[in-house]
Structures are given as structure tokens and as C-alpha cells.
Amino acid sequence: MKKTILNLAALVLLVLPPATYIFINPVVDAFMFIRVFGLVGFTLISLQFLLSSRLPFIEKTYGQDQLIYVHRLAGITAVLLLIGHGVIYLVYRISASGGLRLRFPSDIPVLGGIAGLILLILVAFTAAFRVNLKLSYERWKILHRITFVLYPGLFIHSMLLGTTIASNRLVYILWLTMFAMVLFSWVWRIHLYLRSRKKPYMLSSIEPLNHDVVQLSFAGEDLDHKPGQFAFISLKIGDKTEPAHPFTISSSPISKDVVFTIKAVGDFTSQLVDNHAGSSAYIEGPYGRFSYTNVDDSSPLLFIAGGVGITPMLSMLRLLRKDDPDRRIVFIWGNKTEEDIFLKEELREIQNDMKNLKMVHVLSKAQDPGSVNAAQAAEIPGLLDYGFVDESCLNRHAAVEKDWEVFVCGPPVMMSKLSKTLKVSGVPSAKVHMEKFSL
Image (tube, rainbow, N blue to C red):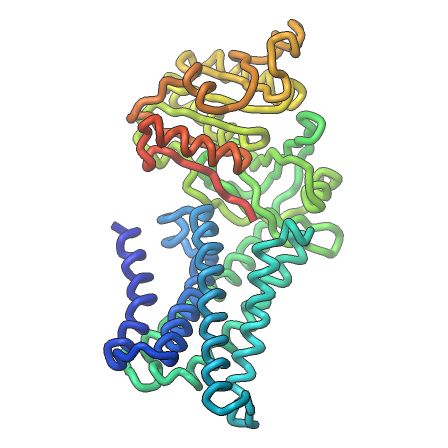
């Protein structure tokens, strides 16, 4: 019900202003496209801040990972619409007057709009191609924050030049309400930042689990999370606090420490690994809806993980071991080699305590049983398979029916293929839960 109300509210914000203009001016011309593109584009920009605000009533309804996915899609659409808005306006003005002929100071709002659009394109381009541009997370985040300066300027531009806003009281009130909501979302983000600074955590231990994965334990206030959720970590190094990065919580909600199992691949994760026990950090969260606690507690569960994508499953298995050891579960974990499998002893203990848990390890670089010697195979808890976590793998190990709840976390390619496989197998989309979170 809450999701329906929020969806309808967003639809009203998007549709009402352009529909009002079209109703009053039903002529299809350049002005119609200029105004409609501008109205919808600015509304989508406004919604961007609400999508990323981490407001509880929004985050708990959709989950932060889904919100970020929509945030990206809406951002691209907004930029394309505003490019169309600007280009059509400039073409119309040049064709109407034989040139651009900007006048001061009357055309300052126009110049501001052009400058704002250029900056917006820069922000969108660096966000869409951050990996290709080899931009670090920290630099990308600084560029992304340009929008906090840009948005008030775009709002002023729309108020000064937007005839639909000025001439229609309903649209005018809606526009001011939307601006107020964005300001409130900013205040909320500041509140979250300040609140996290009041309760610093201490890095109590750093435990290497294999050649590139470590387990970090933080002591501090109880985070009160659900198994499978994630949080943002800001590491304090000397007098400097690093920007917050998202990581899935791998500890059980009943654990006294907050534990993260991470792969050291980037600058920030390497800093985390290289840091010393006793260092301070700020943790903000929890966020996300990727948890078996959000589904029917009688449903069988299928957990599919790829590599370090096991982290939310670890949190869920650790709690299930204590709270629901008889739950019917199939857990499939894909890795490249036997050396990539970590926490073997704990996984063995979990399997021993959960008689209805079927655990399967799939090795992609070990294509046949001869690739792993007997001693190595004996150390691996559960069944050992070879190849990839794909349709044939599921057919061998998991006879999934419509009442199963499926949780998948791993590399994007694996998740995309499994999504199609599960759909073809007849598993309802509402029963398939994908952890798509990434920044």
C-alpha cells in the first residue's frame, strides 16, 4: 500500500505540470516540447535527491539497491530531456531572430541555464562512465556533489523563465512543494551524517580469510540490522575521515560486533585492510531489503552467491543457524578455485547444525574433479561441483518450485543470466531477490 501511494505521488509530480500546460495550450509546436521537456526533466532531477536521501519511509519501502538503480535510470532520462529542452530553445531562438543575440542583464537566466546544463552533462557523463574514465570513488563523489550547488540554480532558472509555473497556481504550489521536499532531504542527510559522528566504532580485529578477502570486526553501539543488509563505512585515518563506502554486513544481528567481509580491490578497501586494530570508523545504516526476514517464514530458501557476494548469505545463515535450524535451504556458492573458498570450518559447523541445508561449492576454473586433489576436496564442506553457476547447475542441485524464495548476489553477468534462467523455470519474479547494489 505504501509503495502504491509513493508511486502515485511520483506520477502526479511528473505528469501534472506538463499535462496542465498541454491542456491550456494544446498546440504541438517548439514551445510545447521546450516546456514539457523542461518541466519533466526538472521534476526528475528533484526526485533524484529524494531517491538518494535515505529517508526511512522511502528506503524501507523500496530498498536502497533498487532506489540507486532507479536513480541512475531517472538521472539519464532527466539529462536527455534537459538537453532536448535547451537545444530546441536555442534552435528556436536562433531561427526566430537570425542569431542567438543574448542581451544583458535580461538573458542572465538563459546563460545560467546553459551553464547549468553543461555542468549537469559533466556530472552525468562521469557517473555513467566512471569505470571507463578510471575515476576513483572519492573523485566521482566530489563531482557528483556539484548537483547540490546546481539544483538551486536550476530552480531559480525555472521560476524566472517558466511561464507555466508563473501562470498556473497549482503548478506553482507543486513546484515550491517539490523544492521544499528536496531541501528537507538535504537536512535529513546532514542529520544522518551528524548522528553517525556521535557514535564512532572501533576496528577491533582484522582477520585475513584468503588471499584477497578479510574480515573486519567493529566494536560499538548495536546497529540493529536485519541479516543481508548493508551499511556505509567512513574510515578515520589520523585527522582525516574518508568518504563513506557501502559494504554488506556479514555478521548475524545477534553478534556483539558489526562484521564486514570485504575484498581488497580498490584504494579504500586496501586502506581498510592496511589499517590497524583500534582505529576509529563511522558506520551509517543499516539499509536494504535483501533479507529472508522480509518473506514468508515457511518458504524454502535458495541462496546463490558468486565470490564475495556470499556476504549477505553469511549474515543470513549465521542467524538461521540459531533461530531456524530446520529451514529447508539450498546454498550454492560459486568461486574460481578452491583457494577462494573461505570460512570453511564455520560453514562446516553451520551445515552440521542445519540438517535441511544443502551446501554446494562450484569452481569455475577447476573444470573437472581431477583439478582438486583429495585433501583439498575433503576440506570443503558440502558438495563440490565444477563449471559455472548456471541453468545446468541449478537443475543438478536445486529443484526450485514456485514457493521457493531465491536470493542471488554476485557478479552482474552471473545475476543477469540467473535472472533469465529462473524466469524460464517458472519462478515468479516476486520470489527472486537480487542484490544489485553498487556505486
